[in-house]
Image 1: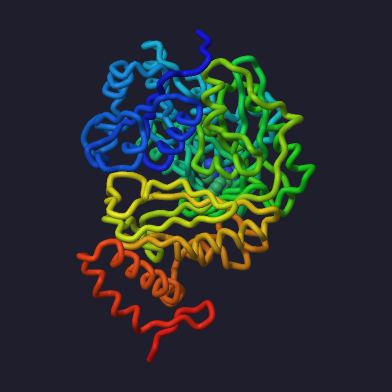
Image 2: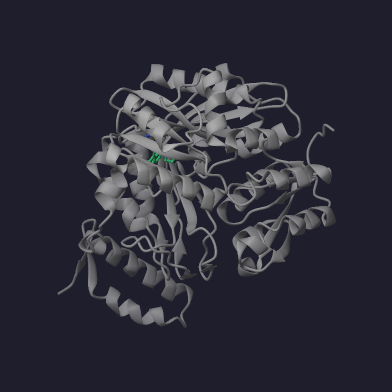
Length: 502
Ligand code: MV4
């Protein structure tokens, strides 16, 4: 059934992405239904939606992943579509099929699309068939140590063993020499079995120190597929991305075109519908790129694509789910200027440990070409149950340098107190020469920021603490932070620096 527009969309998510989707709905005249767990009664996504319903206790399993309950709310509220956001149920085919069964549109790819890319080994075979570059390797399951040994010798060490059902870094082992092969092979099989109930593994040549570069794709039900260029996401630690940018400083124009064309072939191969991301590893020394996996959902870092192409990806998802053709053609898409995104997390910047708690002062950056997608507000308690990311700051500039300087300016304005945040870490990464010259790879954070000296952050933290204390005291005169204002009297500004008055 084709509709002019949905009347009501249930947003099966929380946090900043739920708010992002509510905004798209409101601009399109669609009424939004929020769901929330018992830990999220006071969450901003609940306040901003038109209606909100409790779907269960704090643990995700019992609330944001509770398919029968969410379907029940969708039916009760007469929502004609569901947007799953990212994470949670976004790549759950049971959920997508349960929606379809009730006549509720799922704003996302088809279950067949998700399944085609869920198994890494069959996805890789499909990609080879589509002429998408893949890493040389076994091209199929490797069942025995003997086969693994023969193949590894042929490919040459180092190699990597991967669980076919794996993803996001789980179920992988790098093998640098034959003597480590047996234990790595067995470990990978049992990790596949334990995490994904599938012990199938395969082998690839190990690409040393790659960059993570991904292409945004979009398909519609009429068979059109376009690509919206690349994002570089190499600033990551343990497969958690920290900073993303578009375009990548390492991709030359002719390689960009080839990657984009390969991504379109990849999506066309599986008749992809909706927003998707083709993830490549990129060898910066040879400029070769290889298909890794496809993410069949909207991603956290989608705003940098929005700011460099001018396309509202969430509105486009809604149009595609209505059965409408893409609002753009490949020839009309252009990447303009440069965008950077940082993920602000409630965590200790020195230990990377989560730091839930009540936010006291909170002032978001503002000003030209700065976008903030955040669900933080003063008085809000960040729950321990979910992802620690509380905000994203995205800046745009005509050049990479301008976008980075703008981000440094924006983060200098970002005041958050009560909880620890990774803002000091973000600031120091943005100052790092390796980040600034654009040559950073996926090992950059772990190599340079694994152990962080406290002195590194002290000056910045003191300045932020001072301003935070002042704002908190102003906002809440009963707060004991008023006493912290006495600290302020010991400080004075010297040029751009906060100095202790001795
Ligand atoms: C690789 C690789 C090197 N060589 N495959 C990590 C997660 C999954 N998407 C694939 N991953 C990798 N596969 C070969 N043949 C290095 C990684 C990898 C990585 C890839 C993208 C972003 C960050 C990464 C961090 C460590 C390893």
